[in-house]
Image 1 (cartoon, rainbow, N blue to C red):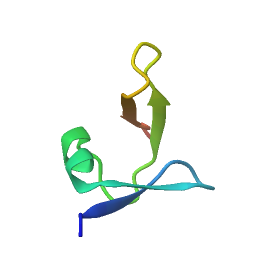
Image 2: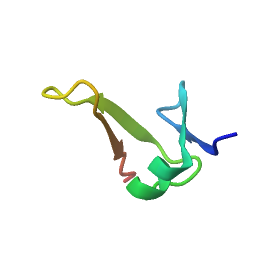
Image 3: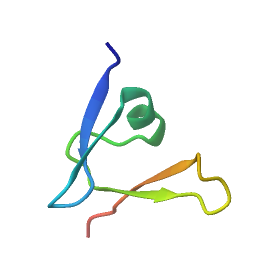
Image 4: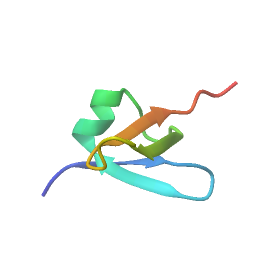
Length: 53
């Protein structure tokens, strides 16, 4: 079974990502992220950490 990590997309939705991705982007459980599709390559998912003030 592949390892997966739960992160939050916003207060309403949650996202489960492969653990490798979480480590690559340096996010942690409970962090808020945005998920975007690359306009030039629809097979590429862009994961960005939402900075809290």
